[in-house]
Image (cartoon, rainbow over all chains, first blue to last red; front, side):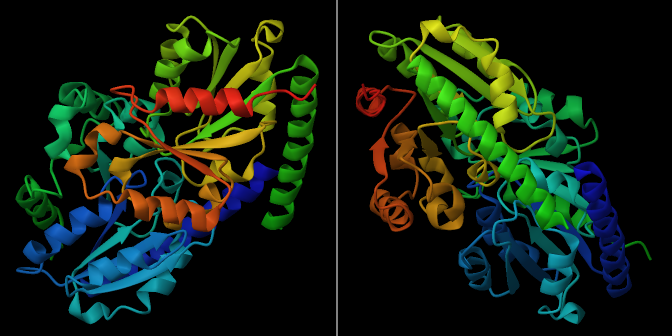
Length: 217
Length: 217
């Protein structure tokens, strides 16, 4: 019985996600679903990258958290539109939450929408949100075995950011082991080493977003 | 409908957890539910502490992960019994999984059982596993705002370990801010700063476990 209920929820979510994708397509907006563990640096990467992205794009961010509006406030300080969703206990965003948050954003002034999911390496994987693709922010302090231990998440990623590379020399993180773990689950995923703290790699991230957010005419 | 199904699941889980608690009580075993984000250092803290704990206790560890037996293998190298649960997609352990894993452990030779939950700061909070109490391992690299952002988890903790303190000078982590965040949600929780890497604080952790694992005669 539980399985039936869950698959009904997933079906409804996928239909709604398709509607969001269609709406965004009409407006010429590309959405990215940003996922990762609590404290992996999802918001920090966006904070540091937005000033570069706004040179060429209209950007908005939807933030998903169980509680607080901390992240939407941090994003708002960069000058772009942000909207906070509080899931009140739910471990992931769903398409209905995203559609509601989109009503608070002026879609006519943007062409790039980041949807930052709840910090969680499990639950968000199963829920489409109308995104063009998925970006996982993984902190190297979490260890190099995270892909193999959280395969459902990593197997749907289009881009994986190895964040907090400024700390790498103080850890046992093996970059090649991590890269192999990602590629085994998702050969087509790109992987970029970044540090939201010292800014390294973020220009490459911005270039990746620019390259992959082109809307076909 | 979803709500009804979920509350039935929770009720069944709580009944089973109570059975586990009763069984453990009869055997004189105290169980601790170890929770935290992916890569917070839950296994590493246990690996470094077990040699100290086994001076005075019989120890076993149940490991919960979506995939791999990596963690149970790491624990087995310390010489104590370990049992791996693969949840195959589920974002938390439940009492039925723990009861099954307990069948693989010789309960007559232990008085301390660690149950390491799936790396997740949301889902495990709602599921009792027969534990005496809950320990959250939080990596300081995750940031000092995790308590307020994941209140359902931190509000049930008996002990919070601030792990990876060896990296603190390379981060913006404010220890007092983190401590206040925990205390606001759970005034009675104890908080210990540790580093599974350099071993600092682990003797204090072991003393806490010893003190709180005494079985009333």
